[in-house]
Length: 437
Image 1 (cartoon, rainbow, N blue to C red):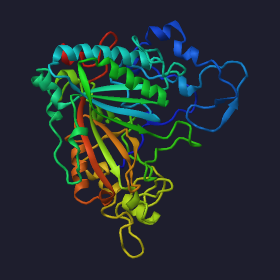
Image 2 (cartoon, helix red, strand yellow):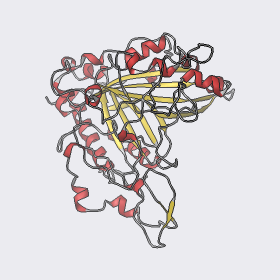
Image 3 (cartoon, rainbow, N blue to C red):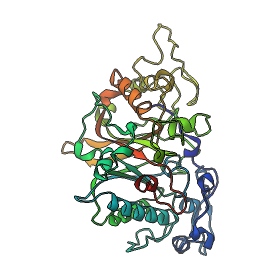
Image 4 (cartoon, rainbow, N blue to C red):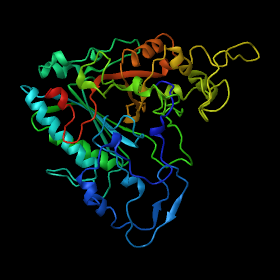
């Protein structure tokens, strides 16, 4: 839960729009033909109110009694093809699923090729607001694309299963052990990883079910986790998201507008130690972090702020200013005590306190019910992106292990590291340069 700000691409839009193709990728044939089947169906039965803005949430406008087009929330579309895979720099979605698969016994490279072909074809259709090509469940037939993104990655074990060990990146070596780890191996790692996000829960579930059906006998689910975020337009103005501790969570995330953003987040086409098939890709660290909310909520608001190092109300540093004000780490109070405690989470995770280590955080909150004593199983599905996890996630987490005040209120219960290749060009499937190179 590092202290980094929401990227510009992750901020809600101020007016209705359809997301443009990344890196000049052309719209697919469905867009060229006009309104998709699901978008057309989405116009039926809409009465009374339509969302007035895509992200500002400033109110609602009266709609004609006749059928109206989908609101911007439903019509917003991310593009499947591009230099990078979707779901990395796209805006945070209100719901999502993380799922890992293991190849079935006897399955290898040939089966993996066929599976990634099927998955890519299905993801492209669903992200365009179309039905799955075969045996569509109809779950999302009334909705538009709803900013659906589907992202695919490969785990360390995938390369052994497919005979591609020589193509396995060094950066995919297993993460070191951390003192805060209480990891469940059954809910960690995996041969293949899929991230699904959307601004409609049925659209997200529809994608999850379609991809799971596509596996056939080639793979089986190893683990699956469900998450959520605040819905676009739920606040009066665009804001950094809050987590289940009530804290603004995402301040100081690297921004796409920064000159070194791509260098920190994406693998370059040349000049790195990564294999050529990872060009334009990134590495995803996935952690299920349980928040010990009963203990956290016993703290006073002041004590909570001292743990984090920021005001709970607006995310501003305790040293003063607004959320985006640079934290003054040397500022003291009238007694000479540091205003931002030495073990405050925000102090420890600052990139300038970690040799410039940076990662793009794109998490979901989760809640999986209560135990027999009424203790919530809730927290953060932490997903962070970086060009090299050994220079991104690992040094920050090691430093947190040595004295983060937040550590006593969280527990890392599952973990995974995945190599996420660059986006598929038109006519390609994700991972083709690895599997057929």
